[in-house]
Length: 459
Image (cartoon, rainbow, N blue to C red; front, side):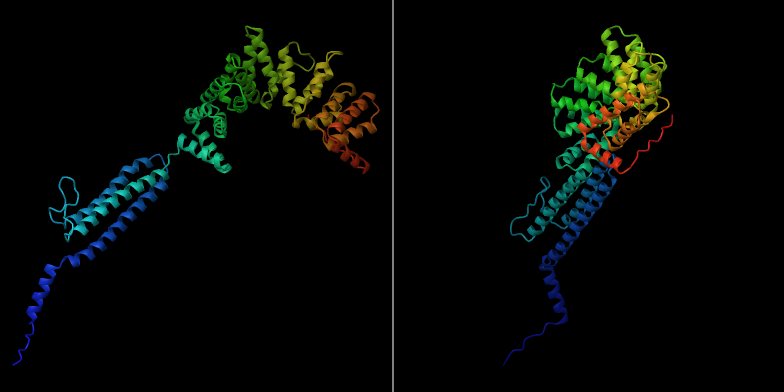
């Protein structure tokens, strides 16, 4: 007789399911753990990215203060999630001393423990990476950061970045002086030259003193000459007393020359008044000569009125070398007022007394004087043929343009005065030797019937 198999009851099936779940629960736990681990990593990564974005946008001196907060936030996100996983472990699975996994190999909990350990390391690594990235994005834009950027820009010849770095360094003012001076003193490369340029542009008394002091300690050579040339372009008016003191006190001739050149470009009435006072109080011939030479090299239009006063009235000759220096300086300034003053002074000179002034006028070569000299050479009513007019014609040799040559050819063709014609011929011949093309073009215009129109300047 065949025995029928018994069919499990509903209650029996429930008991079997409960027994299976109870004995095989890790099979359900591991998938959930993997999903939770993925969610955790996404949370940490998103938190890191958000904080890093905030750091990059801030770019301010307060950005460094946010670093501890970011680090703490990362730790809290990571530790909170990891503690949730660790709470599911048996009490003896993690050593209370070292915190390391202690479950034996082959134990069902081992993979989960290792996963948690990997999560902990991942969270720590992510925090460190984010702080490193944040530090890079948060590169302090102080002097050192700007100098680093300047070096890189010079290396790659990125002129826009060089310009921006220079503007930023100059904007820092005296705050940038120390590191800039260190770079100038220790290097001879292009970056060091840009650092010297930044100091000259800052131009405060602090920056000027530091640059000139560094210059005085350099050995003679091409690098020192380059730095001296840069120091000669200081234009910050606040530094003129320091520059004047340096001119008188410095022992290094290169430093003296740089200080004098800067002064000559920024001189105005207060500067010239102080120079005159020091000239009158000079204790040695050397000091007086140095100050007179400084005056003779002034080229600043701001000193025009004071120089004309120093040169005395148009009817007096230069009674001493300081007056002569003022006349030389007016030839350097060479604007319309200066040229007119010198021509009138030449006209008023006594016979035999105007040779020095005549030579001074013929040496004028500043571009701004061209129109005034053309006007005088063409026959201004304020100058005579024998004095001012011939001096202006000879000065035109310094302006070898087609316009100049056309005027000279017109003078030669129309004038009757022998002195004027002779001056025009000699000047044209000298220009022909120096710039033949200018004379050729002028002759072509003359042959075509093109006449030069010289508009009188406002006196």
